[in-house]
Length: 265
Ligand SMILES: CC(C)(COP(=O)(O)OP(=O)(O)OC[C@H]1O[C@@H](n2cnc3c(N)ncnc32)[C@H](O)[C@@H]1OP(=O)(O)O)[C@@H](O)C(=O)NCCC(=O)NCCS
Image 1 (spheres, rainbow, N blue to C red):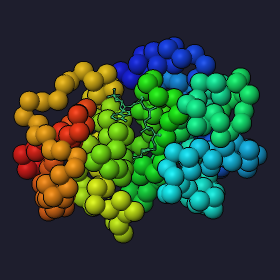
Image 2 (cartoon, rainbow, N blue to C red):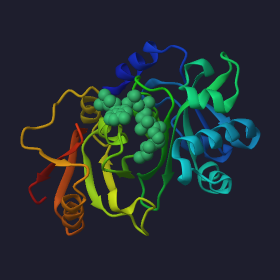
Image 3 (cartoon, rainbow, N blue to C red):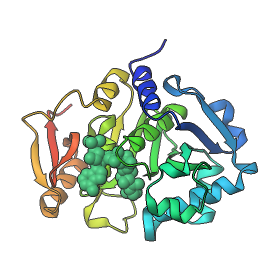
Image 4 (cartoon, rainbow, N blue to C red):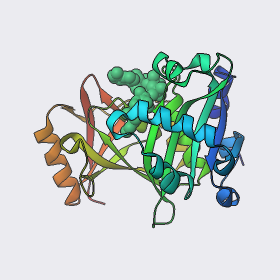
């Protein structure tokens, strides 16, 4: 039975018909994937036979993340062997300038416009958000590639890492409230402003409402400047001690994050 997200996904692709959904990964995992998440067909490309596409992914990942872009061996060992990367592909002419220039493709050649990789974890149903990028601004491409990739791998929960001041907080909160988990296990290059969050994907109707931004931020949400690292660090201390704190959609607004505390559960 088609759920609440299928018509929204269809509307997204109808708005930019040049976009298609693909996956790049090892053939062994194909039977484990849902190749029509929310009704959108996925073309699975075998990483074993698509080295050129993997190289394009590597180039764009390194462009998007700069100094902390994925090293090539990590791409092979920890992305393509254990899982599959979700890709939105489109003619190269649609890409933002730095990506178009870096790839050196003709306008109509197919390029990766946005991509998401979530890694499987030891806990069934729980995936870890590893890399999300988009060179197709203003279309909601990264929220959609993230949601469809999570559908493709049949994720029920997502744990991800981001920064208070990263515009991506608005993207992540498109999938619903971001429960604060705490600091990054093992530390992070941007430790002082980075945190771990969890998104619950089990209620499709709730995810659909968040994708549409149907519910504005509750008036009870506290606004904390993304630069107030002392207060934000204190929130992480409390989250690690068991407090139920979450960033509520739209997550970030005018240099602030929007935080809500839930009663003990
Ligand atoms: C973050 C990123 C994935 C967003 O890509 P995108 O989906 O094409 O971006 P969009 O233009 O659709 O914008 C997504 C949201 O971010 C907001 N946004 C984008 N750039 C912004 C900026 N500079 N400042 C504030 N908000 C911004 C948009 O307003 C939009 O919010 P809305 O959906 O609530 O309206 C992309 O910029 C990127 O690849 N960044 C580098 C890699 C990265 O940081 N990844 C995330 C790691 S956690």
